Length: 89
Image (cartoon, rainbow, N blue to C red):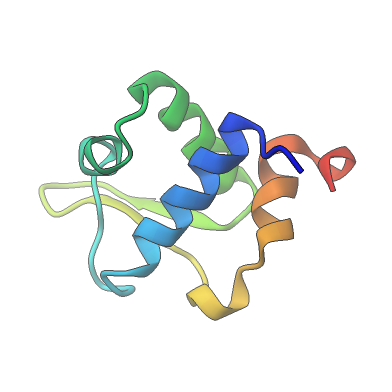
């Protein structure tokens, strides 16, 4: 099975955000540096993950992105559906 590039970036972003814990926010620049992907594409994917309630953002000097739920409560199908819609499953 081929995983589309946007879904792959989504998986990697969610996995990356699951490592530091819920109190630590990660900036888009930090996530892009880790993934070595295009910032514009990743920003769009993060927006889609936010719209589906998987990621939240925090403003300010200590702001960034963090997971809404614990990593154990987020499935691969949640990420696929957020990025590709229900037709992607």
